[in-house]
Image 1 (cartoon, rainbow, N blue to C red):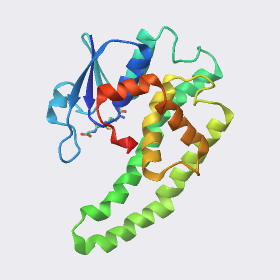
Image 2: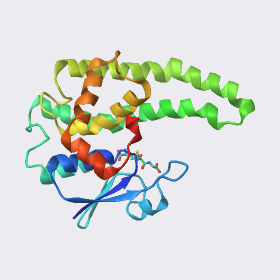
Image 3: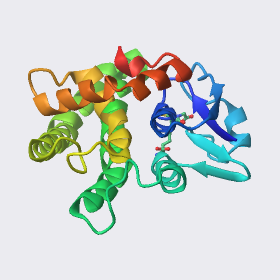
Length: 221
Ligand SMILES: N[C@@H](CCC(=O)N[C@@H](CS)C(=O)NCC(=O)O)C(=O)O
């Protein structure tokens, strides 16, 4: 039996979605975030890092979204949701499967951390903290984020989905950072292809079924 250790309102939503696309039976074990937004300590009993997603399949325990996606597609996909080996689509598939968590998410997280710094320091230090975080955003983080989104918008000018003209599991992996960015800054009117990507994936029946299983997902608010 496949069990997804699912932290509410988190990246593990992607794994529920892939399982729905694959039409597999699975159990969702839901973990509530602590007031700090951290995962509860009980998740550490499943995997030492205590992050979500974690998936167990019989006696196998897997962590890291990309690794879990690869495992599920290879084990249960029967060739679905992955381009054929040796094609340019497969190369792009592998690239975006890694890029989402390896390059894009760290940058978006850095932006979020710098944005939050001023509200986390004692109020007399806030003007200085605002200057530092605003400066870092303007000179360092903001231009990089803009560069990444321009790159991604350009990729979708070439093809319908990130690997090619077929929907693949790499699109599922790319969904979380792009939904988060759309919810925070809004792609509408600025990045029409990224906006269309988010709209198309949210319209998929398997995506909607996964939302029902996973509970509220405030990325979408
Ligand atoms: N790169 C990892 C990131 C895992 C991760 O940071 N998960 C978040 C959920 S969005 C989490 O568990 N946060 C709670 C915490 O850090 O305690 C992956 O994609 O699986």
